[in-house]
Image 1 (cartoon, rainbow, N blue to C red):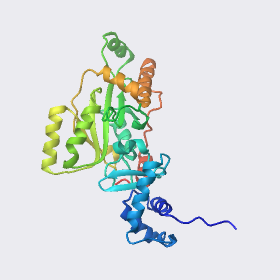
Image 2: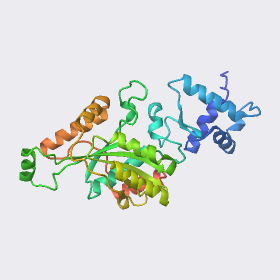
Image 3: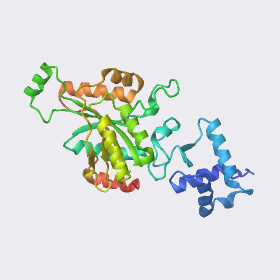
Image 4: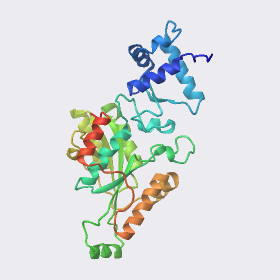
Length: 315
């Protein structure tokens, strides 16, 4: 007779995280597991079962590189599954993509919103590519911190200038292409504003324009005044996404345009990250044929975007 496998704390955590569909603290996992009926499957709980649960998850993540669990925030400590339906995170990009996660979606879930906005907005008219930080070369700890933006974008002048004008621009060795850098956040409050802003400053130095992007932000006078001071001092712009109508997203603060690009930094990014290298190669190829044919991030139609926002519960 086949022996039935004992239901464990880790099984309980997995079942609860799958059913809840959002990251949870160990206390939340324990409470929801009771609601879902998973606690009834355990043989023994003890006086503080959530501590036992937390200890097992810590050890599992620390000692097992192939663990299906992942820690997604530090204060409070929350856990999720690597293969979470709404998650694109992996163990190596948790810190850069999830900070004190409280929503049912992740920063990368917002990328299609920005892609659609900047593609249709008259200021940008750009094509974007998501940069996966976890693909970068692994080196000394901290060396590549704040090196990569979340999304990069390119504006081509093909639709705005005739072929004759493009040729004369090229003859004068002037750059008619514009490069953009975007740092994405779900929510920005006063306590994180300067940190996020300087993150954008750090990873946007190579681009013609750099932006900090958020779905939510503190709308008080102190926050707005500090944002304006940082914008005036360092030139990073700020974009407010609108999940209900992406076309109504706003450039609340324009970025200061850099007339030239930092080619040394671009070269470093090409060496460090294959996604960025692909982005640069695509630009070269498309500009040579004067046609956008490369596989940039998908631009959703308004109907597709509405379905996407509903599916991912982005509010």
